[in-house]
Amino acid sequence: MDSTPGDPRLTEQRNPRSMRIDQLTPLEIADLINAEDRMVADAVHEEREEIARAIEIVVDCFQRGGRLIYVGAGTSGRLGVLDAAEMPPTYRTDPEMVQGIIAGGFQALVRAQEGAEDRPEDGAAAMDERKVDANDFVLGIATSGTTPYVHGALRRARERGAHTGFLLCTYPTRKVTQAADVVIAPLVGPEVITGSTRMKAGTATKMVLNTITTASMVRLGKVFGNLMVDLQVTCEKLRDRGERILVEVTGVDRTEAARLLDESGGHVKTAIVMARLGLSRAAAARRLEEAGGAISQVVGDLEAV
Image 1 (cartoon, rainbow, N blue to C red):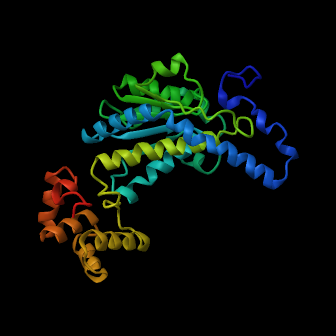
Image 2: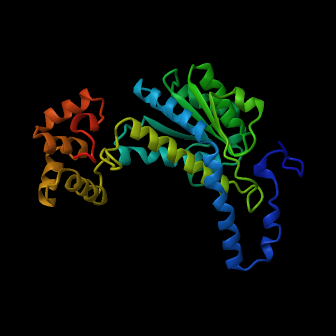
Image 3: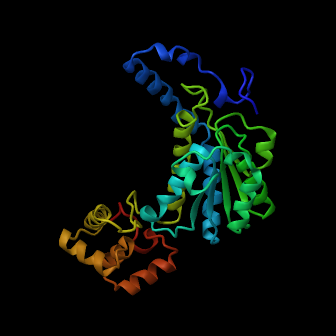
């Protein structure tokens, strides 16, 4: 679709508030961009019911052993890959559980791969390569709503029986609504720089993805109260966080917290159960498995302790 004055896509329309941005001072430009950014949270809030629906689908897929797979191009694809990459260290998930696919492959993460987004057959092939099936949820991300690669991926995903979603920042067309089980469309309005969807649309995209995966991890029992108890201790920062969580939740001192973390194999949830119930690592792990990983079902509510 051409970018013309009559283009119906909000992402391609000119913003009347930034028509003379090239004549502003640095401070005025910063103020203008900040004023526009303030609109993003409200636009995302308007889509809360659709976001909640996506969360329900994702959790159901996870509980059946399925995956959340993001598909996008350019900024949209990079944000999907970023969100997926942050899940294993944050919530100790299998890297296969949340995946990000970007048109053009790995190289497109650091250097634009012009034309890669124009091939719907490549999006379809990506679904075949990953053997997408009925247990999976494929979320297409295309702020303009028109990216051929994303549409090709969603068509093939549906053919393979997967649940599908579409995240865009313009008015959904019938083609979009018919291609997805859930459509999330935060209308952030025209960008400060016409068509630069790495700005407001990109911010909205990140907010939505953060909400979907964070809420899904909470529903899966990977959070205790509001503490990140299923993190993966892979560096000193995360070890420090794990020890501090143990101190707060169990009341032990820092030395005992370090010992518990070592004895649990670096698994904070297991260490909490060990400390609170006086169990061995194996017994604590077994209790968590029986509870489906929901730590509150094993040791009770955090605030009630």
